[in-house]
Length: 312
Image 1 (cartoon, rainbow, N blue to C red):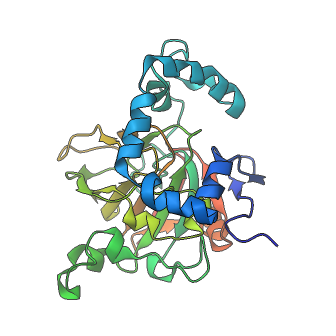
Image 2 (cartoon, one colour):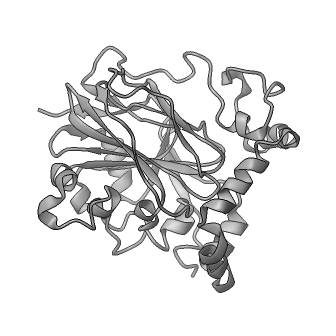
């Protein structure tokens, strides 16, 4: 029997209402790095370190990287009709990677109803009504460490203000693969503050890696933005860097009101992750997200799709 790290990755496709097997970009390399003894040595010495991702990002920003664009589009079946620009005009693979889409390519669910929250990114989503009860969603016995994720584990418990606010709250993990649209958006309307950077490593956030150690989510570089929403109260919207994703770029303006679905920023090359945390009792996630997540299955859906409704 294969170990958890060797098992294929399946997800539920929300639009098609079917379960599908994921085509993993760089799968052989990932399985070697996180599953083989020599691979794990290279992980600690090279892969998780920022300089490697900076170097690869630099290579993907060179003019000659454009030769990778068309083969990538063909191999992964990307829909060029939704691109804001022709694939022939990008000046580098990185520019193609964080491409914008045409207006309307990602319809925003119930756009005029601020009590409906939306998914912040294209990708594979896990949703848990209570973060404290979420366990085993990538590997048995592993729990989401809220204090570590919010950068407060080093503080005495009495001083963990954010952790106290979000303890028992609702958690959404949105995992982006290299083939996905790599801009992220606000899941709710409200007033965002400044994005706070927490420096860290750059491990992969693929399930191949997270089945080994869920802690990569809070050991990696990340940025946390608090959004004060009239309908949902305070919401933490957090972006996580990963291997080959050294750059998280925020394009929004702090202290300026935003609408749900409005662009917040972008990731440069690689797979990455957005984590959204609501305070307790403020949102009821949609049933399909909760049901599939309870069975340890991610739900593939696109940015702007419905996430849930304000509770109370």
